[in-house]
Length: 287
View 1 (tube, rainbow, N blue to C red):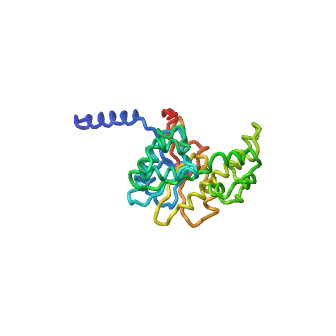
View 2 (spheres, helix red, strand yellow):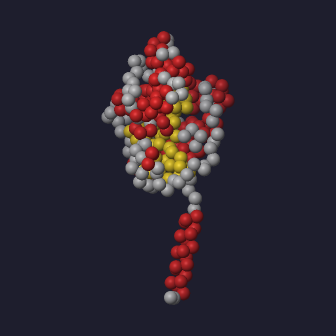
View 3 (cartoon, rainbow, N blue to C red):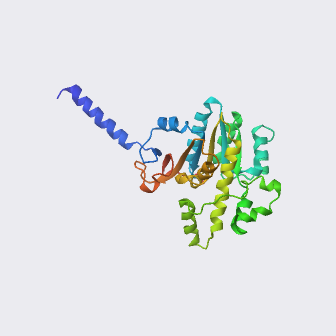
């Protein structure tokens, strides 16, 4: 064997060892569990009018990917952001912050920010502020969701004032208890003394976020919505309400999952979304 051939074999062997020892934090899969490159993921997800990005709230890779996707979608200057993390009655304060009328401290005082806002959501909000991207507070005020759970379902919202009803999806709200995700949620909660009203509290959030998205969608913009993955997993939740109201738009979904082995998507996650962001479960959580 020639010296050149020996050198080539040795180089190939050492290179393969190096690649085998490389660690990655995530893998992207399509709905069927096939690995997808980041480039292909971007190309396909950009084709949609509305993109639903389901996150794990304490997963930093989710938040990093949301920022990367925001930057990619903003290249043509036609992007609207929406987030579960802001409730509809806080829209004024959020708009004031985005316009520079108030500072971050005032926003923290006026809006009900999540405990992990500074680490996980402030970066994307500040990017939006710097680039004139609208950010829509899409979620129902939590006190009204609690009212649904504790005071007799959707009917409990009939007592709200007209102003308060403006922060909720229009009543009456359609509800399908047989949707697999809601059904599974009920079966799990029923074992712990929960009722169907707990599921309805989840549904009113989904319905209100869907309503907020369509209320603020415009034909010349892509709408990227951020929320907990359960709200759109298996093409239900927010997406179900969106499709009931407007089946003409194209919707793309992204789900986040965590696995010890990210080289292959676990069977339980197949069909969870158009694209599944599979994150190494050893990644440090943000809280």
